[in-house]
Image (cartoon, rainbow, N blue to C red; front, side, top):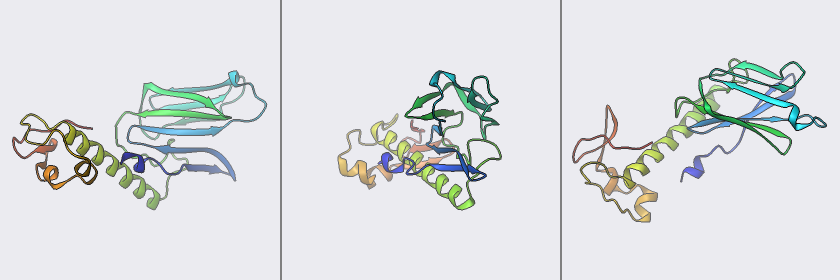
Length: 183
């Protein structure tokens, strides 16, 4: 179910007719993809990720990208790799589920319609993650069935949804009013 909510396409940031980078996002991370120039040894490329800044370039040259990030990231779990002539930068979001309109401030912002679609996709993904976690881990009172069948998992059957309530602490169990773990 969550696979259907994975990004189905990358967004492109184009400047003066040239693609600078492509990007997509999930609940947890923002991924940037930069095509590498040919005939440059891979050991010369670098990427520095700071909590609010990213710098990418070729050693001995001015940076290709040197920009503030749209939102803060977790530097200890952000990383970069070189894959098939592409630099792939994975930025771990500090705030899970936050919708980014672009990886970098003021560059390549999504139009309002695309931003709305991204936000809806991420909200649905988060809801599905949390509801499935609740179904598989019913909580303190055990009032939810802890071994759902496939139809109930896929359809989020009424036997589960009717036992859930939404309160100030998020999803909760109607039987005991305790918040349920998830997400």
